[in-house]
Length: 131
Image (cartoon, rainbow, N blue to C red; front, side, top):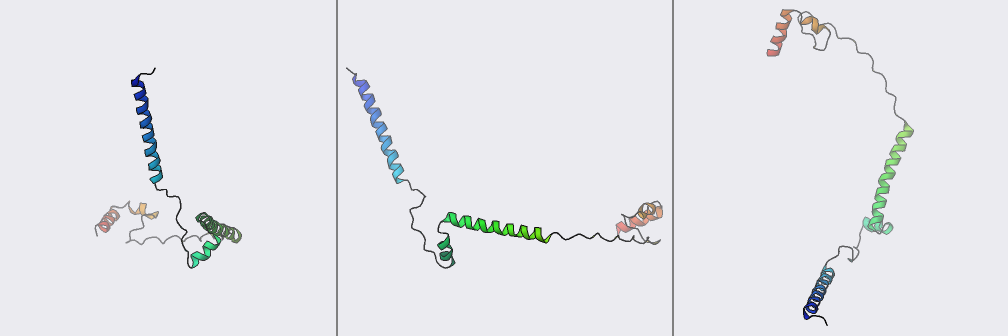
């Protein structure tokens, strides 16, 4: 009742599907998984003692993180209990003595503006820059 063409088409499709499924299964079986299967390492020294309390890597991470957090909290509590030292106000600084007649006053001083009013002083300032 069915034409041979349709039967051949379904047979080819079935073989192709089976072939793809077989390849996929073979690839999945041959694929290397990185999730364990290796023997646990033999610990020696301090590692052996620590791994006695924290056998899994996750336990070690939690222990180390907890240690750092504990240190942080201790220092914060210590700082809060000791309080911050009071800052003393600085004593007022005495004004600098006025520049003598032959000296160039400091650029930040109030006398500098008056110093620049004289052409002789401006020439003296330019000479000091050229030195």
